Amino acid sequence: MSIYETMPFHLETERLILRPWAESDADDLRALHAERGKGTPTIEYIRALIAKQLAATAATGIALLPVQRRDEGDFIGYCGLIIGRSTVEEPEIAYELFRRAHGRGYATEAAGAVLGAAVATGRKRLWATVGAWNAPSFRVLEKLGFERDHVSMEDSGEVVWLTRSLP
Image 1 (cartoon, rainbow, N blue to C red):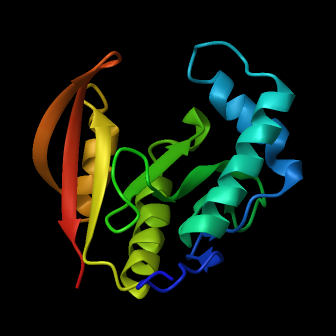
Image 2 (image 1 turned 120 degrees about the vertical axis):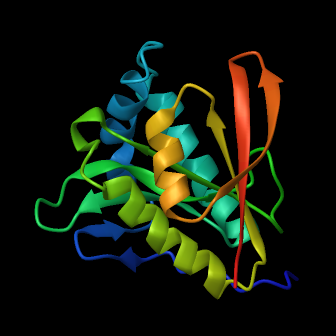
């Protein structure tokens, strides 16, 4: 039994809706992964990834959620809490948006809603890990009050660890 409350899985902001994964998200998630420039994953791989996310949510009470624009209704990425490189007690905030959605404050807006959801679970601290090259992600995290903690080296290069205490 977790000492933490389950995170809300439906979050709404002025412009965005964050909600649980559906099978119908597979094509959009596949396109988002393809934008990373490392090839396009198979639809089977993406369906398995969504199933894995849903299972992780059921097991941990935290979730990575699809982000859609409220007015347009289109999937623009995801944002949420994951164990990632951290722990269920001090999870990581994670987000990824389509390039077409960059530069409009959507990541900050979605991550702000997730931050509120994390506070509601009773957690005391969150982490974020970001590739050293990813200046836009650092700006999002700085706006949300995250501070640099340390750097680690991985196969993909330098990873910066940031943390934020929760009220």
